[in-house]
Length: 86
Image (cartoon, rainbow, N blue to C red; front, side, top):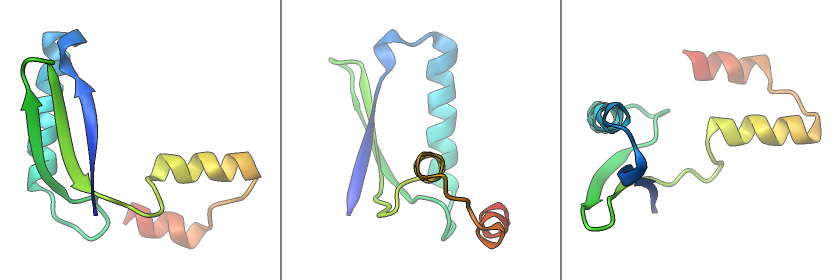
């Protein structure tokens, strides 16, 4: 399953636009089992939006995991933390 992230670059500074270009270029080059797979990007110049098409992660991203754990007062296991870091 694929998902997309929509970014409105029309309200961004030139520096922020360059950062997005750099990040998309990095995502395109990464290939690892623990990194969300990048598929493509679509630029809608009329609406000044860029859509980044990526692999869907059933469990969400790391930020969502941390938020869920904080909300439920759970702890993330040390084994999992080391796995993510390595």
